[in-house]
Length: 542
Image 1 (cartoon, rainbow, N blue to C red):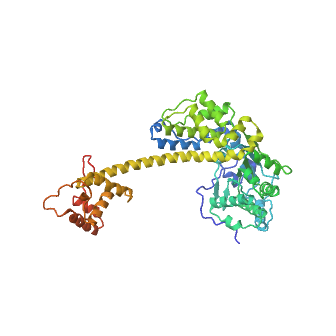
Image 2: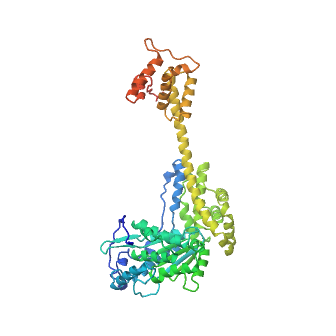
Image 3: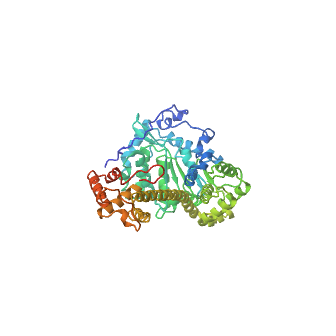
């Protein structure tokens, strides 16, 4: 079976090389194709992500402003804890590539040996190295404190895929895989192959997806990672992987050791405090979770970071009467969210949507409290645990917080979409009323008694599902002609008198419709015959 990937989609970026600054990086295309290493001070301004807002947008319709509120999903405010993260990601990628120069003869020889024997299930080191393991990093904390967002922003400073046409290979600088809820190690490894196939248009999943054992699949994933020079693997929500049934510590340890010791690929693990405890259990007798930095991120305290974040966010108000951040608003906002970044943003969004919907058009402490009481009910036990500072209780409700945050994100989207639907329905109803009025007026002009015309028009719009004046009038006239009657005679009132010399209206109507039907356009025929008229100057017309 061939294991050479079939490349169907070529990424647009092409590797551009710059001379390495360090001798150990010289001549290594995997490093020389990377953007230059920058310190956090250099890139922190670009790290932030700020949605668009203007004063004029506060005068837009309600449903439009509710959609604007959704922009806050993208809001990222640089914080001191982000500084070290940006630098560590850059160092990890370079550290992993230092000993993996694909142009080094020793590396090439080892790579060929690795390729020949990997199909038999054996994992070999790729090249002589200066260190026995690749570096790793860990980041843990309760859901919603911005771990994943921060990592993704740090990764965004590096291209994900680089084709090296000069040397004939692809370089995947980084991969971020979310461990699926209740997902097994096998599912995670399959997700890895799927992601590589998505990026390169390859067929690794089909080639290796039928592995008989997890250990065999680990070997195949390692081979793919080595073949495409993976620089960094980020595993998010790692607690899902560690808690999955059937994932023993031995298999997990095999996976991590294969990445770090055998194929020399750095990795980052992201998870909750429970995930940290489980991961420490896996590595208790092997090695530390992280040797290039590990951190536990807590929710905001009521200090400088909190003030910096909230002050930056507070300017994004799409209510017609924006307010300054008062001490009372600040206190309620913190109390209701306990400083969890994602909850702060969600409460800010949902409160604005409520203010816009109800027409109060301003934020207040009572509104924040009301919205939190309604929307955060499921999260109440977790928020109580956070207020108590009880680590056991906090860990107990980790899953509740994770699921609750997902639900709140859906709430924001649902509220905004509901506003659009209501606006569309109102606009549709206004349009239908106008079209009905025009249709009734047209029929009255043709001699139909008004009450009968209304009945006919209502029937055409509601039972037949017609949408416009023209459709309704044509349908009514055609029906009357086919029945040998005129709309004028369907009512109880008297019809308008026909002009002398005109043929009987029922015969005239039928003749006009029949003649127009030959060309497929009875409507134009009725208009040309003067039966349907354009009435200017504000009078209803079809």
